[in-house]
Image (cartoon, rainbow, N blue to C red):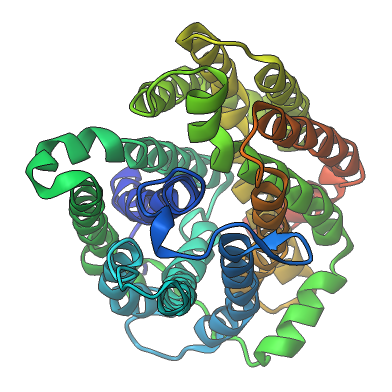
Length: 444
């Protein structure tokens, strides 16, 4: 008999999400901000457009995302096929946690040579390693979601818990300028590096908590998959419902990456306030989102996940339009942040649960459990969207004008609306019918 999966176990699991979302936030929120334009580290790497209107930082970050997307199914396949007696997922997470955090700090420390070409190469290599370790931790981590969410109640609960820790981790990452003030004696660049180093250390500890405290074999008994990574990936994308979901997911992540990358710029360039206000806005988004977690949890069980996610897409579209129109003053930021919390709550909780539903229905129909590959295939797809988003953002904003930053918000709004329309193609009722029929059969 396996041990029951309690909310305590799910909360321990969710702490890992805080750790890796903090590291991801440090890169997505501050890499472009500090290494381009008037950023304090911009003198260390090549600036301006270098190839087909693209920038060095755009090319490096985009390649990193593509590399990340390609390695996702490889790690997922290894995880799905793992016969480690300690589990298919936890051993990967335990190995990756510390190097993942270490390389995040080094990304802001190592490119400090006098030659910008050398720094370009170092930054490129460091980001490739960052995405490799991120994949090695996050892909098995995400694969645990449907396995720990062994009932619909647990599935929505664990999705809610990791959404909470994700948002908190992302919000804490905006604290870099504030934490840097504690290290002002180290100089402007040194204080930023020290702040990122401390936050990376905290992230490492949090990622190790589920890796060390959850004994996977106590809760999960799954036969390893025998399908190789490439074949498993093809099988996953052959699932029609999964493809319909992924179409919208790719475009959504393209849009939200534009917004997240641009937030610090919207604050400083459009609202004309200090970048330290970015954290306050993230707090407002987090609080307004948290208030809605329980209602979203309840409404998802009553109305279904699909309808709420579509609503979230359209609401985000309005937030992006407002961002494109915003004027000077932090009041604009407060309004945008408060409104952004609404779709953040919905889209933070429900998409993971949708993928878990699809993977469970597929396992019922095929007899093969490939949860890792479903989540890897999803991340493979949306990271391609993120890669294109980073290219677009850095290219559109090369002039560093107010208009260029407003254009990024407009692009995000249009794409988010398209994502909502595409999600309408996903047939949630068909997926849930398979799961419910199987559950009734087991009860008999």
